[in-house]
Each structure stands twice: as C-alpha cells, then as structure tokens.
Length: 313
Length: 124
Image (tube, rainbow over all chains, first blue to last red; front, side, top):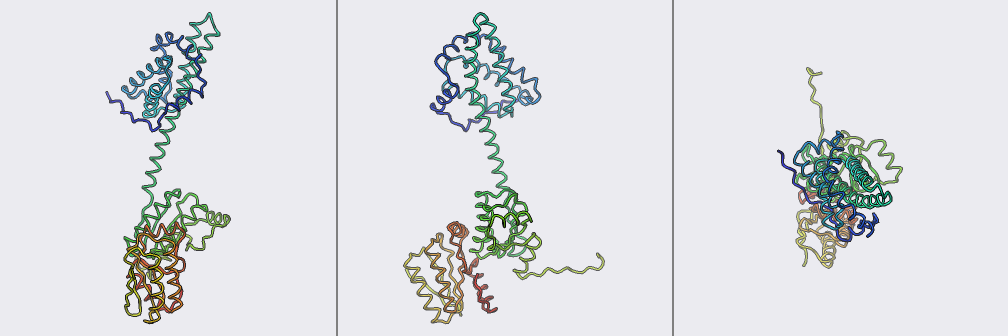
C-alpha cells in the first residue's frame, strides 16, 4: 500500500484574533452553539453515513479520481472527515478546530482535488445532514430550519478556511514556477572574443531586470567583454518601465567599459515606445539580432567574409 | 591621504587605493589639473577597481576631473568600476555621462592609444 504523503504545515498562520474575526464573518452566535449542541447526537450517530455520502458523491465524479487513486490518502481523508463532522457539532471552534481544517485542506491540495469539486461535495454533505435534521425534527419544522442554518454557519466558516488554504497552495506553486523561470532564463553567451550576446525571453519585471543586469555585469568582467548584443525579441511586452530597465542596464555596462547594442524591437514595440514618449536615444538599437551582430563585429574590428567554394554553389 | 599619481609616457595613471574622503578627492582633482600641464600629458587613467562604494560626490568629482583635464588637453578614462558599484551608481542616477570608461587598466591604455592615434577628441 502506498504511503500517505507527508503533510507540509500550511504557510498560513491563524491567530486567535483571526479565528474570532472569521466567526464574526459567518455571524456565529451563542444561540447557534446551543442549537448545534442540540443536534450533536444526531450527527455523531450518523457520522458513517454522512462521511460515506461525501465520498460517494465525489467517487461519482471522474475529476476526483486522484483522491481515490491512493488508498492511504483516502483512508486518511475519511478519518479526518469523520473527525470533522464530530467537531462541527462539538461546540468548540477555536484554534484546534481550525488546525484540523488545515490538515484536511492540505491533504486535498496535495492530491490535487480541485476547489470546485470539493465545494460541490461539501454542499452535498450539508444537504444530506440537513435532510436528516428535517426528518428527525419533523414535528418542529422551524427548529429544524434554525438548526440547519446554525450548522450552515459552521460549514461556511470551514469553507473560508479551506478555500484560503487551497488558494495559498496554488499561489505557492505559482511562486515556485516563477522562481524556476527566473533561474532558467538569463544566459549570457560569448560568441566571439570580447563579444557577448544576451537573449532575453519572457516578462521583464523589476526583480528580473535587476538580476539580469547583475549577471550581465559580472559576465562582462569575467569574459572581458567589450560589446554586448542584447536581444529582446522574446520580451512579451515593452513599456516605459521595461525601457527604463534597459536604459539602466546599458548605462551600467558602459560604466564597465562595454557598449551595448539592443536588438529585436519589433515594429509594434517601436511604435508603442514612441507613442509612450520613452526616450531611447541613449540606446544603440538595431532592428534584428543579425544586424546587431554585424554592428558589434564592426565595433570590434572583425570582418566576416564568405569563403567562396565553387563546388558548393 | 594623498593619492599617488604615476607618470607613464604621455599618460598619468592614478590608482585609487582606498575609500577617499571628499578632501582627498578635491586634492586629487587639483593635483591632476596641475600635473597634466606640467608633464604635457595627453591622457589620464583613474583606476577605481579597489573601490566598493562610489557616492555622488565622488562621481561628480570624477566627472569634474575629466572635464578639467580635457580643458588642459588630456583625455580621462575611468577604469575598473566593479559590477556592483556600476549597478548601484546607475540606480542612483550617477551614470558618469560624457566620461570615457573601460574595463581595466589595459583596456584604458588601449582606448587612449586609439583616441590619440585617431586624433579623435570625442568623449564617451
């Protein structure tokens, strides 16, 4: 049997004040606690069928397959769900309760259960419990409704926590990916003695521009470069901010005695920069990489000549 | 602490050894202005590779030196600005515009030689 994946602690920290505020958001009142206490027995007795209702509902949806693929995870989820149900009517919704929610939410996000699926199943669970409440309190419909509404408040309190955790997880993954892209994407290549090319691909934000300038400056020193061709064909958008980054990079390279040729400004980019009123007169720009290399070779005193080979023509 | 100024042919070489006070900088400027005339130098190279900080006063003085020596007939090249220093200077808006720069002493000599040979008086 595969091991259940070990759970990372959530990055989100809940303080007592947070929890109190969250209880306020769903308007949890002393009355609600009383009503919940009244249906405590009903829920605890039916923990098994309720848990089953939640997981059966999910099992019918193919998108939930990842949860059912791993027995250990499923067992753990079921166990946590049982504890959840009992705690929902336990009358104590402090930090311990929230920690329990975090654990389950992290489990869901670890197996990749999507938020919308979880919401559907959770709604089904509340509905199942609601129907049971209505059935048992048939004699007093008003009390049944009120009890259910109190339970619903707890339900939404839980949702608030769980959705936050799922979103946090997703953001964490996005952050990791951005980091990976950043590390991948700033090679500085020497193509001739004293000539570097720096192809820039992707989005150029402040942080990346800084990193890029930094690595370029160090490359200039270690390669003793005199000319750098910076190609921005692959930069998704060039606005005044990006243009300023470029100007700064060029100025810094010049301080180290290297001249920079910027290439790859497309027709649209050139027009939008002019429309924005960005002053690029300090930049030495050439239309494409080929032109840039030719210009650089000229600066360095190279002369590229085609060797005539009659047999290959 | 006075900064030594070395004469090498028609070039004056200044190697800045430690962080300079504002006073030292002004002395250096006066010394250079004097010596360029005295030795009839055609070029000045200031090596700042040992500096890990360059503030606005130092930048301004270096530019002042370049302009002064120019008036006295010598081209100034600043060499050896460290990557981190270059980056910090640009971020502070101290780009040393109009002053020639080079990677190191070797490069600076070469640049000066090329300029003098061509008789090219353009700076930057």
